[in-house]
Amino acid sequence: MSFSLNLPPSVVAKKTKTEEQDEPKKKSREDWRKQKELEEMRKAGTAPAMTDEEGKEINPHIPQYIMQAPWYYQATQATLKHQRIQEDKIKTYEDRNTWYKKGLKEGPVATKFRKGACENCGAMTHKKKDCLERPRKIGARFTGDDIAPDEHITPNLSFDYEGKRDHAAGVDVEDHQMKVREEYSRLEEAKRMLKEANFLEGKESAEKSQDSEDEDKYADDVDMPGQKFETKQRITVRNLRIREDTAKYLYNLDPNSAFYDPKTRSMRENPYKNTGNIEMEQKYAGDNFVRFSGDAHQFASKQVFAWEAYEHGTDVHLQADPTKLELLAQEVQKRKEDFKSTAKDSILSKYGGEEHLQAPPKQLLLAQTEDYVEYSRHGSVIKGNEKPVIRSKYEEDVYLNNHTSVWGSYWKDGRWGFKCCHNFVKESYCTGAAGIDASHVDIIPAIGNGEEAGEEEEEEEEPKSLLQQHQEKMLSEKKKKKKKKKNKRKHKKKSKSSSSESESEDEEKVREKKLKEALKKEEEHQKKADHLLSLDERKRPYNSMYDNVAPTDEEMEAWRMKHRRTEDPMSHFT
Image (cartoon, rainbow, N blue to C red; front, side, top):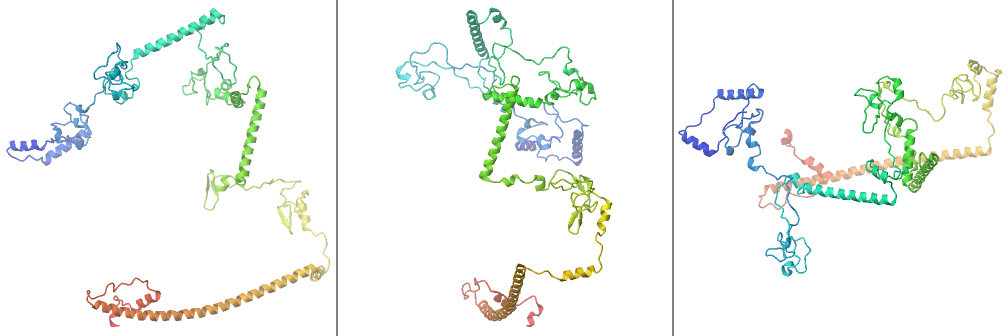
């Protein structure tokens, strides 16, 4: 960044005339290099920065287009004045504490109408259109009666943003303070007279009236819910401690320990936290330990209930009658539950939707949980909880009568049993390996020719009843009907296929006829087109080459057949 003169055109023209019309000298490469090195040194801080006309340093990192003053500023040296607010544009504002008189002027009021005064009220400080008094039936100009006093004309002061919005602008502070003192003195005088009157009537003693001036000020209208307060009994409850007890802030002198609030004299956290001092923790563990341990939470909720009940007109107290309060709270809770259940039942009976309330949890519906599980390529769990086993609603893994397996763990010949002893009786006692061996031994010995006899018995069929015979007959008739229907369907399919073949043959013949007709039309169209192209343009009929009809499939096929392909080299020999 460097400074260069930026002169107006008129000054440049004058200089060229005085310098014997010589051209201005241009900087050489060496000058440009030196100037660039100086700029780099100024930015690095090894060379002193440029200064303006006031001697202030100019930041070398400011761009050239910002530091360079415009030609009409006529700057002869480096400056940044053109970037700052000009002195002629700086506005001056009045002081916000400037006091001026407002309201009516003091002194005698005019008795006659004066020339140039308000025609309505007769004041000289405004005109009729600016008058704020109620319009009179006959103005003061004609009657000359009841001339209004003149007002103080407020000066035309210019304020800044805050001064325009100052509510106390133009207010005399001393006058306001004097009014406040007078009002306070009048109230004190009235209180003193009231006390003297009460003393004369015998309601208060002279000693009590003297001491009451130095007493603390207590609210007379305290009506706290659940409290019996009378104005005559002045009681103050403060968070005091016995002087022999250790102060809370002296338990642990570490500045990073529990915070002690001097205003409420409370230390909520445990001062011996993370110190390992178990004996001292038993003495004092913070205020929150007392508030949130035992029945403290329930006690606080009952106190809140007592306050709410007192506000609704029920005279109950937690300390005076706790049994009554407990019974009342139970009754209110029961009524709330009954009201909720009745409201729910009425909504369900009116609009329905009870089945949606019995929906499974969202984790089962959306199959999404917050548990992180990492699996391998084979599906085994690498990291995280393993897949839980699906349980039924019945009791599982309950072994009865000395069994080591559950009922249903063994299956044989269509019967369930115990796997540990192969016993099929559910309430039996477990026999272990002896029961397994006994189940494999045949109790009834094999009889000779028993197999042949069994086969003969199977061959001999039992006599069937009339109902069974009738059912078999009906089944055979149904099977026959089904076979007939299948045969009919096959016959219909064959006839349809033959008819479709004949129809396809007819369609091919019709298509061939249409194609022949389209070929003839295409030949006629080409002859007509050649004839029209040979004519002169002036003799050619209007829209002779245009026909707004979509071609059919046969016409497109005929055009493709008659179309001459110029890209084919053998097309000229046809």
